[in-house]
Image (cartoon, rainbow, N blue to C red; front, side):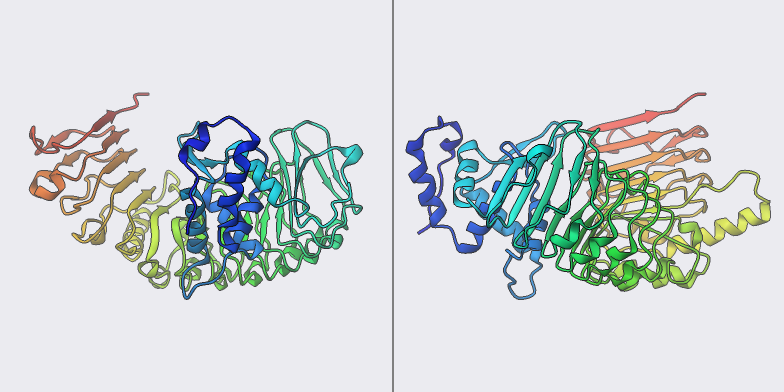
Amino acid sequence: MTFHLESALWDMPQTENIFPILMLSYVHLLAHLRRCFAYCSIFHQNHEFEVEELVLLWMAEGFIQPVGVRRLEDLGADYFHDLYSRSFFQRYKNTSNETVYKMHDLIHDMARVVSKDICFHTEYNSSNCYPLFGNACHLSLLHDNSQQIELKVSLKNERLRTFLLMSSNVSSRAELHPELFQHLQFLRVLGLSNIGIAELPNSVDKLEYLRYLNLSRNPISHLPESMCRLAALQTLKLTSCPQLRDLPKDMKNLANLRHLHFDVEGQLQSMPLQFGRLTNLQTLFAYIVGRKKGNDIGELKNMNGLRGSLCIKNIEHILDLKDAVEAKLGMKTCLDKLELQWRKLRSGLDPQLLDRRRNEQAEVLANLQPHENVKELVIQNYCGVIYPNWLSQLWRKFTSIHLQGLKYCDNLPSLGQLPFLKYFAISDLPSSKYVVITFMVRAMLRHSLRESFQLHDMSALLHWRNVSSDAMPCLNSFTFMVVII
């Protein structure tokens, strides 16, 4: 028999009378769900949970039981929604209109009760930072002032599996003792985001069981090569590290890495050599094409597990058509969004060289054909004069297309065969003189482009052709904007 908490729980006053009911609901959970629920007590009350993040932590702790060939991430999402369906979490929109989840205070209190002596959450205090945590396996410290954080070798606990140092203060500064990690060698999860660290100690390689490492929002400029000996690492988070310019050279050795997070528009200049050996990668926000064999676009060849969003940058470095084919974008069946970025050509190029670049880019784009499952497409700074045939194929599932900075295209692609298109944006196309609307040619498209049609910075636009009053009857938003300097 399955016990569900009534949704009215969220409106009930805090009283001890409700605790027996809550505990009854908890004890009837399956064992793996009880572990996952109790683990949430290491976060403070009112913490905003993101499903993907929580699942990655559960994975790192080994809480998710394999079932056949299903991804652990999908199984973990099922775990979460099972708990949510029993009212252990509440869903709402945050200030950024993103869906997040919270625990009711009573639920959080119960999580602390059932995880007592195993999970520990406290505020950082330099005068009393290292109490005896007893048998604690999971520890989080909350730091919310400008006091410098000093993590010393006296932080010792061989049972510790999770260590999260969390801060809400942008001016936080932390100092990690060079030998700190020698005493935490059994860690599975290490979270050091937003604590102001400028470097990671070389002793990080002592964490041979580490599966999750979060260094986001720190002024880190480089990562130690010793990190590449973390053979068990599954998740590495490096978002909002604006000073980070390079990834470790031997990153190819992180064979179990599944999720690599870093800023698409960050300072990274290139990918490490033989990056394509990371064939278990599922999350890769950006791939930066290099000029050398070993960091060219061909490294994407066997990374067919990539999913979500992928931005391919510096495509101008692809000079051999075979390399574009070698990337095998058509084999990436789980990608939802693909962004293809060239860097802008410098002004004053020799006309013959410019023509050669145009032809090269047209051939390259034609051979960067994505799988039909891609729904969002962005093409930026492409200097060819023609569009690839695959852009308007009938079976494409594009719901969103954005063409930006296509400097030499004097017309637009015919998108009349795209039945699912909802959003179409064109920006910074200074040579486009004609916009020929072919939407009414296809009845199915007339009823699909319903969200938004935007034209920005079309300074050479002379004609708007074939537009009738019923060309786009379902359109919600039309924007035409020209910036005049």
